Length: 379
Image 1 (cartoon, rainbow, N blue to C red):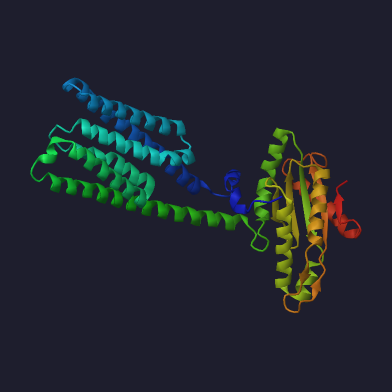
Image 2 (cartoon, helix red, strand yellow):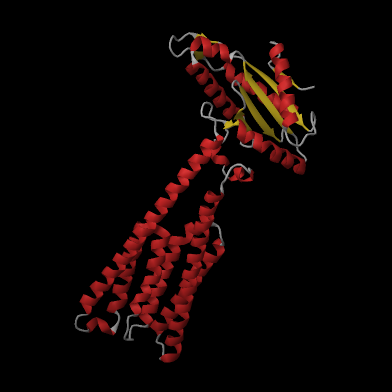
C-alpha cells in the first residue's frame, strides 16, 4: 500500500493549534469566492442586457423572422450560461471546467444582441467588453487573447450585416474596434495571469514552509511534533466512530554503533530506507513519524493490536529485502529492528495518547530484550 507524503496532509493539518494555516486557507477561499462572484456577476449583467435588448426588439419595432431567431438564440445562450454557472455552485474545480463554454456562449449572446441593435446609432459594440473582461479574468492571457479574436470575428460578421457597413470610413472603424477587442482582452488577461502567478508562488512558498514544519528531513516522514499534536484528535475521532487505534514503535537496533563505526551518512541512509519501507507498507490513513533519534512511531487508525502486528511483520519482511552497506568501504551492515505495539482502548483509556505511546515503548523494550521476538504487543 502507498503512503501519502506529508504535503498531502495539508487539509487535515488545520486542527492543529500550533500550525497556522490561516493565510493558506484564506488565499484559497478568497480566490474561490472571487471566481464564484465574477461568474455570477457576468451572468447577471448578461441577463440584464438581454432583457433590455429583447424588450427593444419585441416592442420598439416589428421583428422579422431573422430577428426572432436571434431573440431565441439570446435566450438559449443566456439560459445555457445560467445552467453551467449555477449547477457548479461553489465548486471551484467544476466551475473552472465550465469557464470556456460560458465565455463562448457569452460571445454568441452578445453578438446576437449587437445584431438586434444593428440599426441603432451608438457605441453598442462596447457590450463585447463583458465577455472579454470575464474571459481575461477567468482564463489569463491566452484565454483572453482567444476570446478577443473570437469576438473580433463575430463582430465583423455582424458588422457586415448592418446598414453602417456601407457608410464612409466604416471599414476603418471596424478594424479599430476589433483591434481594441484583442488588445483589451489580451492585456487584461496578462495582468490577471501575472496576479495569479504571484498568488500561486506565494501559496507554494507557504505550502513548502508548512511541509518543512511537519517533516523529518532524514526519513521523509512526519516529525514527532506533528504526530504528538495529532494523537488527541485521532483518539477522539476513534471514540466517535467506535474504532480502535494502535501505536507502533520501530526501534533501529544499534544505530549509535552504526553511526560510530560507519559514519553518520550510513546511519542516515538506514533511517531513510526504513522510512521508505514504512511508507510502502502503510495505508493513507496511517501516520508515520520520526519519533526519536533511532525510533519511528506510527499511528494506525482503525487498527487493533492484531492488525498492528500484521503491519509490523510486513515491515520486517520489507526490511529483509533491503541491503545496507558502508557508503565508503562497501562493507555490509546488518540492520535489525525491535517493535512494540499498544492499542486504544484495549491497553489504555487515556484520551491524550500519552499512555498509548508509553505502553508501546514498554512493549518495544521487551522486544529488545528478547532477540527472538522482534514484535511484542503490550500486555
